Image (cartoon, rainbow, N blue to C red):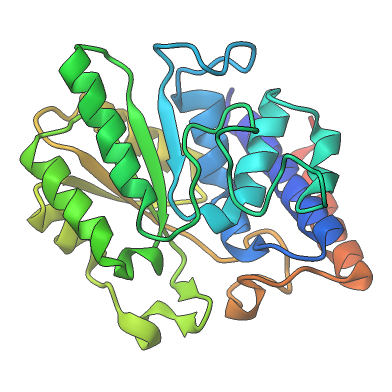
Length: 279
């Protein structure tokens, strides 16, 4: 995909997020929206995956460590063709396979069940180590939240990954600066995030999470980095794309009502028009 196509797809992903959370009357739109461009680049440009063969042995692995932003993952999986986009409206509904957190047993394309914050990164490190031990060339990507990295287990996993020189591992921190209780600086500042990962022997890249040219350069650099894992610190805007959600911690885990949903979708339709129409 070219840059414009990626921008258009990311907007479709955002529509899916808002629609799913509105339909569920629950969920986490803020962090899903801030990570939408990252999801889009990974699934439509970066990763070696096949929706027709979700379990193929040589596929790249993805772990959503901040599992509460499942609406973002589900929306990109649906738009990639793992399951019908229409099913996004069943999010969190009784009997739906699209639970509030990713479930590897029931959702095609999900490599790890996640949601207990801090634990997903350990699973990703294990996948990367497994590839090394088996002589396989697949890569493992893990998306974390900047609030999530306040968890100690993240740093245990980082210490191990750096020590074992897992250069097939890419840690991505969605650095939107906000968590459920407010600013990460006020709750328990993890800053400087880049220096911390550097101290654990990671190659570190700071990037604008909403610039596809910058994301391409970052992931290309990660792929060419040998002898150490890479951490991409993706500076993002919580609620990106929806006017009243942008930069607001209150939209971390709140679903829009009918009136708010209409405004949100109008915001995203306007972005479609500015990009020259939806895909």
